[in-house]
Image (cartoon, rainbow, N blue to C red; front, side, top):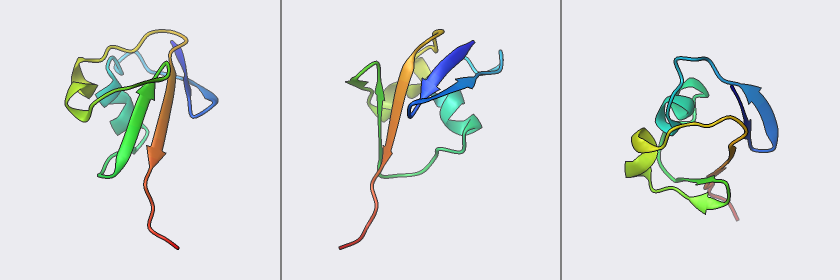
Length: 67
């Protein structure tokens, strides 16, 4: 299956079934992140319940400090 992660198409292993699995496999863990799937924000508590689908568009935004 292929998904688009931050405007980059990636091949997803068959063991990666949920948004949470994808986040872990791509080392996108930690705090201060927002995730949208097909332009809809997904709350962190729903990552494990959000199944991946072929062609899904996922945007991950990390908050950074700075001035």
